[in-house]
Length: 336
Ligand code: ATP
Ligand code: LTN
Image 1: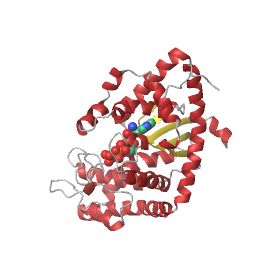
Image 2: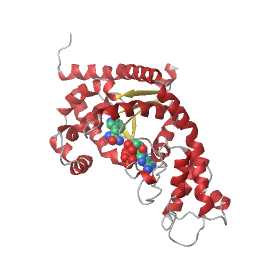
Image 3: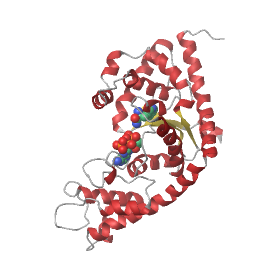
Image 4: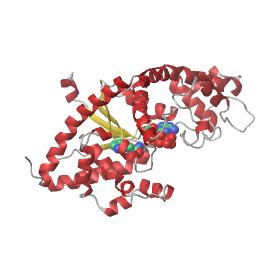
């Protein structure tokens, strides 16, 4: 099995354990990741070190770091086939980050739009970590020599900076790092808020956000309250421009059932939104039910989750330390 893996391209991505997972995260990201496992060697980690650039409640961070692992596994990320680990369990991330700090320019970091956004949002805590965050992210990536880094559009600038840092380092010391490509999935469903179909589904608008741990009644209620459209047509028809709420519900329904928009229109012809909204809710409830139940079961099994994190950290550290040793040697750190 290991031999087959060697020939696969490698993928790596980080996820901040900063909130509960929702339907947007699931349909837009995790479900696709789970489907990729046969084609790539995949590394996914919880970026807990990144979350403290913004103040966190320590007990909450600890809880989410474990619960999110349970939720990712329940969503289909098999811990045997994917390397799943917690960033702070692999010290090489912090170690390489320091070295890369010395190969990253102040001007480059000043241009990062996320830094500008976050320092506006958290103007009372513009700490140095917020500024050097992209360097830690570059270290996260380069340690594993991945071919691709699947990220959302908002992280593309950070992956491009990572490429620049890798190329700069390589031009001085030879081929130390693989220069990775960002992997921005085009067909990745973009799910919008149920109450705000103009904005992406987000935990910051909880009324319109379906969390994967929501119970069936809560999900049904959220779908009942979903915004459809302000015309009087009351007809299930795909029109993203004029009927964004209906289009969003159709997209959710289509992604879950595999039905095309035409099939959905035919299925609900003459029925109106009163029937359509609960039907989408029902499909989501049934899709999430086994995930929630499995996550609940795993969340109670701390020993199992600890073991996954332990194994993940070992597998990750093996690869990461290899790169780190090479870097330390190249920059001239005296080796024992
Ligand atoms: P938010 O904070 O707005 O609730 P998020 O920040 O939790 O969303 P991220 O942590 O940025 O989400 O992203 C995790 C993954 O989920 C990313 O790959 C992102 O593209 C994806 N994602 C997040 N929200 C959506 C959505 N509404 N539709 C599709 N994909 C999404
Ligand atoms: N910055 C990313 C999370 C992240 C990441 C990474 C993604 C941290 N390190 C390495 C890909 C590769 C975010 O906020 N979504």
